[in-house]
Length: 346
Ligand SMILES: O=C(O)c1ccc[n+]([C@@H]2O[C@H](COP(=O)([O-])O)[C@@H](O)[C@H]2O)c1
Ligand SMILES: Cc1cc2nc[nH]c2cc1C
Image 1 (cartoon, rainbow, N blue to C red):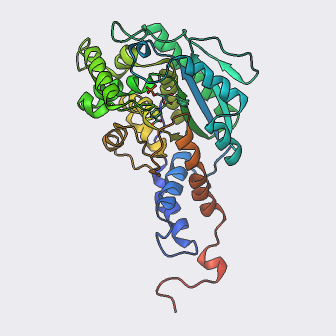
Image 2 (image 1 turned 135 degrees about the vertical axis):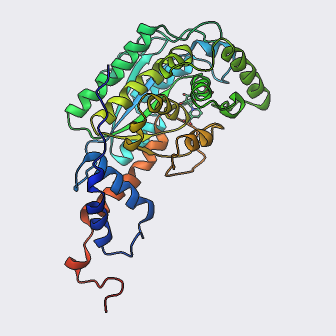
Image 3 (image 1 turned 90 degrees about the horizontal axis):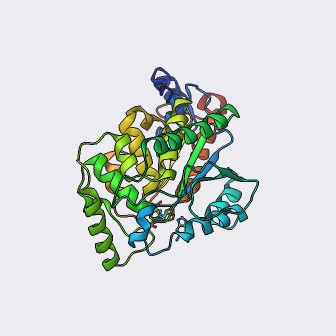
């Protein structure tokens, strides 16, 4: 179903590091930006890395579990926010305009009717998942359809020259799915994985935790990642998994957003650990489980802004940093060219 993920060009490491160290700055003075430039060069297998046509895919879907009161918001908000994305009024639209990246809104499985709109990418597998308290959220063929539809979207974009992807999501109830994936894929206690999502009270959080504990009891602990995804995932999460695997297979840069996008990445990483070489983790969300999930993945997020919106917004605000990393590498003068003395030269 998926192309293999190539190994980054580690053989370029010394050469690229030497270019970085020749730039007119003290060694290491651009800090994490230097690490980003090095990583992007190796994953693109070039000494001349670029950020080309950065594109954000926002996948939206509904969740059967939302009927259990695991979110303070009703599931209708999923479709309403999709309409808002299409009208250009959401936070991710503002950041897309500000930071100059392309935005595609994908219906992965929204229950309510969506407006006719030329920009809406219709790839719905079904109108929402089943309630995973009672049964598996999806069947195998639905899961595989979601994976391949996500994969194919990214393959098309890669063929059009896109080399940088942000993955966002919208789906009332999906912080419950993400918590379940995290619990089964990391082995961490469910309490560590469950958070307030869109803003549950203490009482709401206790209720959500109890419901998810009951749902977890339906399954054994040692499921394969794809089975965990089938049991507890969402269509937007499954599409992200397929899309992320395809991005890495095409040497694309994956800019990982918050808790739910990271749960998709975690699922992909359990299938193909080498996907991690193609990821930059944009931020640490305020959602409770995110820090532990990032630690599990040994991921160092670029930002800590107490954001917890989703939609790809954390990834969006990290894009200027990533562009800065590639720009210094491409455009800064080197010591030899600029006539600046290096350390120890007098
Ligand atoms: O990205 C995050 O870290 C994040 C954390 C909490 C909530 N969200 C967003 O909020 C929705 C899920 O929250 P909930 O309470 O409905 O499960 C979904 O649309 C996500 O995009 C996103
Ligand atoms: C209003 C709203 C906007 C969102 N964007 C992503 N998740 C969201 C959840 C809600 C509730």
